[in-house]
Figure 1 (tube, rainbow, N blue to C red):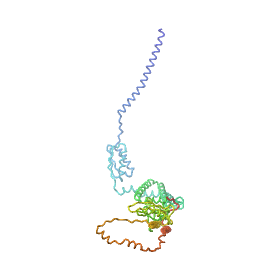
Figure 2 (cartoon, rainbow, N blue to C red):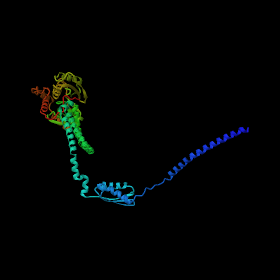
Figure 3 (cartoon, helix red, strand yellow):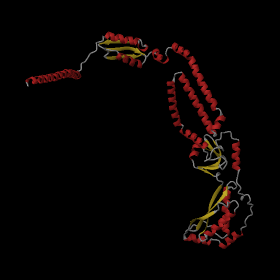
Figure 4 (cartoon, rainbow, N blue to C red):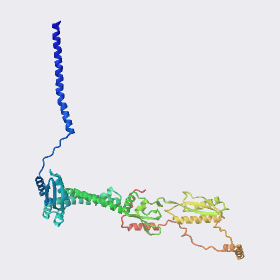
Length: 466
């Protein structure tokens, strides 16, 4: 039994030794980590402040002075240093040089602060040199750049010439744009665009794109200001474009534009010219025409006329209407289609108002004369049929003395009526008055004016009509 137990004990002791060695190794490995973490924590909590090595005042002064000597605008600045505080004095040609000197001094190692006592020089030489530079250097630069200037000028002239030639090619623009007003507008705009392109290319060759941007920006601001100041002119110009593209009337048409009536003579880039019904010229701004209500009498030659006639309240209004319609239908200048019409307009205390309507062809009939003859013919037929066309009735009251005096001086009614009956009617030749043929006088005047006109006319038979 004893001989068997000794090896077992030996094996148990060996195992314990192995476990002890492993524990020791783990402790040895963990101790440096904990020490490192402790040291890191201690460094974070108590940072070490390191002071850079001190720089002598002489070194600072020498460094700043050397820098200023290499800059032409700062070579007259004096430098004094005491305990890292730099004191600058002297004169420089501009205020920007003052700020530059202070900024350069602050960048030097060892400088604590800068006391800037530099003054701006007011001498003519110092003030003019930044703008004009050394004349000898300027002329030398110009001479060296002459070939480049020549190339830029040649490119500018070439592009501008191409733009001018293309813009002047009228047949090409008329083929693209049949409207003459748009031809002028687009060709002029093309010429201006090519000029701007030529200017941009030339400035790019010279390397002056920044200057070009400034110029274009200023031009845009000026253009905006001009556009606001001439807003009405621009509105009129845009209205001219719209009227020329979609024309609301043709030449020699009879129109009513708001309260202005006449025959259309021409449409210009600024105004619409009418010949009024009394033969005068009337120019209406295109902005007004574009926004106006336009009544065109020529587009549809058939036009309706209307008038009122009154009959006595005791008469038959329907019979009077029929008599009037029959008379209107019998007139040669009144159209059969559409047929004449009539209706009772109002019924008053002493009369009944009848409203008659009929149609005429304005191309064949003078509208005003036709309407007037229709009124006269309808009135005559009603009176011949015994209808009374009432006159205004006024009821008056007088004092007894005035009434007796009026009665005593009143003439006999029968005598007055017999005098009216005996009055002879004169014989008058009415052929000219009853001639309702269309009056072409204004048409002939407008045609003559258009034939002799030298002003551009935007009215085009080929353009669409609204």
